[in-house]
Image (tube, rainbow, N blue to C red; front, side):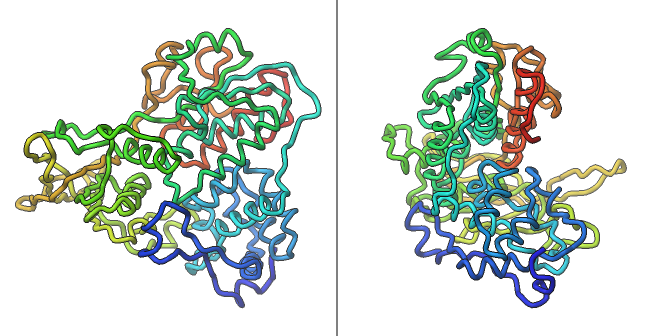
Length: 480
């Protein structure tokens, strides 16, 4: 794979970002790509490592060494074919995936993994530029109809696979545009929404029908879908956010992170929002509670809206600067990471808990916070306890709760259908059949597995499509 001695001769190079002062003035993508020559060199670094740990580390099992080698040999079109064989939407994952493949790269043992994510993104972007990505229209139709509820990455991947198998596929989305989390949960500066639009055009040419602004369970009874279609796939995501029910939660200025992010994505898309419902960080001291990707997206959005300051709080202790490779590799390591948004000027504090929201005249003005200590009990479980005399107040005009999602919304579709739930409140279905407790109804993505990555949703959508195809036809040629 690649150049046999490439990893010894060629240093790792990756994409760079536009300067902070420039990129925070707009909501466009700001990553500066490598040249084709540089990308070929990086592909040459993919060593003949014997066991490509990157391959199983990738949730969609991308055949990474093969397309690295093809890029090195300047065969971009074949590289695109190999990439698409496992991933319907590499332009999404090439921008927003945390790249567990790179953590598992053999060269990561010396902190110089192959720039897999960058090469993946370059392959598919070149495919679009060259016009190589065209509709894959099935030669024959099966006459079977499938309804997919939810148009996030799981729903879109499932829809495309089933359409290519010859089924009539219709996707229902409650929002006014298709894309789900991809459209409304991820800021435009991380992923341009034109990428979704061009995939939609391809999928429509392949026979997929989209029904935006159609809320199943409200506009159309869920049971009607079951009666009308041969199969129904639930891919509505895990949208029930984790709350923080402490004193002062009723103050104005405290919002769930996704409400904040969705509003800004709608503004960028050209939607008009009622002024009284607007959530904006301009000229405000912003506190983001939660240290994950959603919290990071709130930081970048707040700076672009003109926040005076942004502070991010995390209840867990600060991770180490560097992992112990001998203990962690090739698994995903626990270590300190700084996102591009956090690097734009956010203050970060770890091992802290918010005890009370303070306010005046119904508006939040500050948080009462305390530092924590984490200790292992006799059973080996980590427990937190407050450190005495470490309380402090943090000024805040806007507080964004980004503490994750606990399970899918139960009201509406799930309650109407009566699908069984697992112990965490997700729709119960296994990863072989993807069938729920009700015949003809399947579930995939975050609605089934809980809050997770976009790349996991794509994997589940693809696997669920094969399961549905087998259910409808008795067999399937779709890949798992």
